[in-house]
Image 1 (cartoon, rainbow, N blue to C red):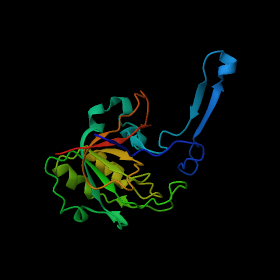
Image 2: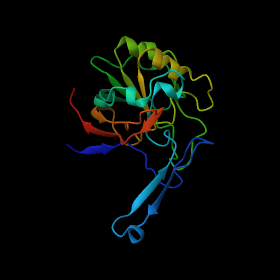
Image 3: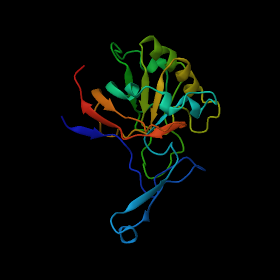
Image 4: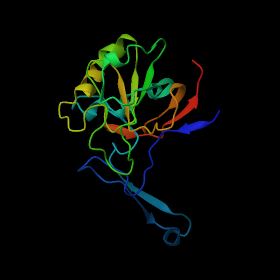
Length: 208
């Protein structure tokens, strides 16, 4: 089966949250210096590009990324279109059959210019979390930098999802990917104290 890469590119100039650490890669020890290999140095925010949030990201007593079960990020996932919405409320997804769904990916197409950080995106309303929890959803993914409005300080969606034991995958690249069932693989790095982790997220066609 072919793999669909739904990760955003990491390179000089990759958009980051305003004020956050910009992405940087450089060769810190060249082949000429070492005599055998090039060795690179990476500097970036954990929340650059495609990444997962750990509860510690928005709660001082929350779990770190290493504490979370990797199985959350691997397995069947349902991708749904929620295009042309300013926000996603429970009423907007009531018609979706969530039988046997444990991971759901929201394709909003609201981040149109991947070269710049967006000013406004489609976000998740707080009432979505309890609705998804009733259907035993364990992970949601979005194609925007945050499940909340970008200027939010309360982070209602983050907290509502956590209260309902639903984990968060952000910054997916879903433009051009058709709605339907897939196998998701988006494993975080084992960062012991991490408030999240960058991931290489991919999909494979999956028949539920």
